[in-house]
Amino acid sequence: MPQTDKQLALPVTLLYSVKNLSEGVFISELSNLSELRIIETETEGRLDETKIKKYCPDWRKRTWWICGPPAMVEAVTIFSPPGKVKSEEFTGY
Image (cartoon, one colour):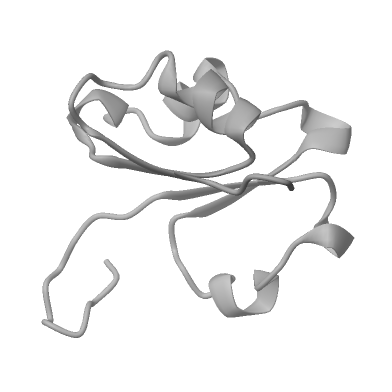
């Protein structure tokens, strides 16, 4: 489990949706996370409810941080657990 500066052991699953690996940012820095799942939209399609349930079976219990273009944030927020979402939109992206 990842450690924070406060030395808290928190379960983290990062679902990183990117067009393809060559367009991914910080892939090498993130690659040491044990729970990193990269979804390449060119080959797998967009991040959706099915993929979230597959890669994070306890998704209803988790707090979600959703960051990305407004349309993606809105699409993922639709099926996220109420009251457990923090989001940031990259407008103009």
